[in-house]
View: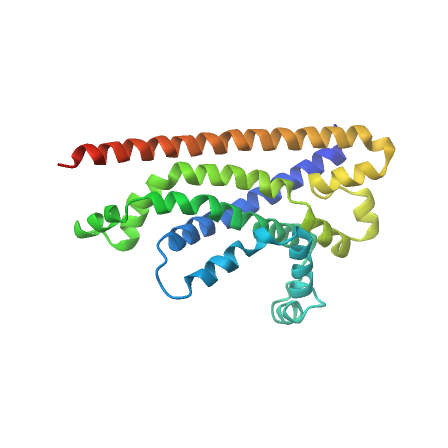
Amino acid sequence: MSSWELDALWLSLQVALLTLLITTPLAVLLASLMSRARWHGHWLLEAIVLLPMALPPAVIGFALLMGLSDDGQLGFWVGRTTGWTLNFYPSGAVLAASLMTLPLMVRMLRPAFEAIDPMLSLVAQTLGATAWRSWWSVTLPLAAPAVLSALSLGLTAAWGESGATLVLASALLPETHWTHEPTTAPLALMQALRNPAHADAATRLALVSLGVAFVAILLSEAGRRHWQRRFANFATAQGRQQP
């Protein structure tokens, strides 16, 4: 495997890990909040969080360009105020992957938090725990296997995201860099397909991506099954305690 391919794989891994560092705590908090939402208009928050799942990835990339690049009003203001500008890596690729990964993780985690009996948290609070402490020590551990499942699937989603990053790469990378230097693994795969001489490189990148996705899905399923067994055992124990 050439250094060009290794660089692309390494960049994809960095993007995926940075994406998970951002999206995992946000997904956990949002899923927990949405599972207990009772205020008027909570459906608006849910629609906003889940909206990227219904949009073509290229639209996400276009929105990032229009909103945060130097050509956008917000991007121009941020750049003038802080000196920050949107680039492909790390900000552009990580933001694009995060926007596509976050709603998927929230969608997976919300049923897990909804299945947890809210009385457990209330009981912990009657014993002196604060609302935050009861959530941290009771609710979150019960949902931990589901979090592992969502995190694993989020990894493969962030690794394989190409639609939004393709738009960003086309706009933010110089043409020489875009055609000859590695970006992320999915984009490097598309670059390799443009040149028949790089067919072997495309095959290797595809196989590595397949392996990452397969392992991530296995871990995700293991976490989901573990959570299901834990919930079933808890429900059985609760049933036995009933008079």
